[in-house]
Length: 279
Image (cartoon, rainbow, N blue to C red; front, top):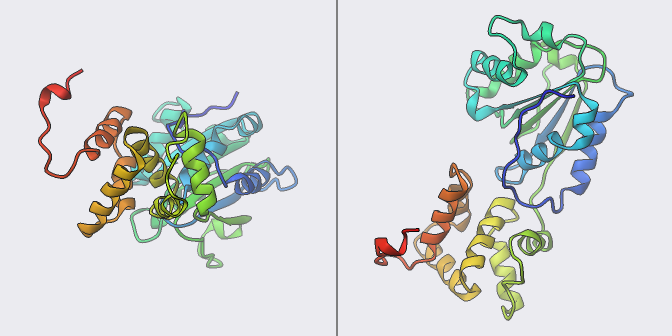
């Protein structure tokens, strides 16, 4: 059984990613390429790279194929030492144990999530991969980044490794509407809403999965015309709806997210009585 870490969380439905998922799975599970290989999943912030990587990482196909799985989030790996600590925790090995020796002979899949240029992670992911053994058994490294990987020949060991780069794009308006209606609601919350207003609501999310789900949460609490009014108020204040969605995305728990959505349904500067908040 593969050693892995539970990376499941409440995420938008897998809509519009089907082709990307097939490409990535094909690269990860390709038995014709036995050399340690890198798959780089790149695209703009919020397009769903981490969500797609998690969906693949936890899939039955990947868990059956690899002996060992490790998920390293860039947000928690500020140095090589922290990356090694995170790896040891997931693999349940002693602090003094050599990770490379532990992985030797095993078919492994390591995910480096959100390792980007212009930060401490710019060279860290290089250092991590350079310490991984090439067991010539189809092991893979899946990297999620905002940009493609530029190879500079002779700069490091990884320059000689096979590399596949897959760009993730924003969802179309049709796919965005499908995300709203497929999972966020038990019934259609946009019933009676003019078609052009529906399009305007979806376009406010700019094709990004998390803002679409954030919008879904608002629509599950309030009528569409009230939600539209709140969005217009946000824009009138010189802010963007997608920025509010980012705040929602990075809240630590479902309870925090529920509270965020609840308070956003009140008019600005509204007086809220504490008794109405108590459970």
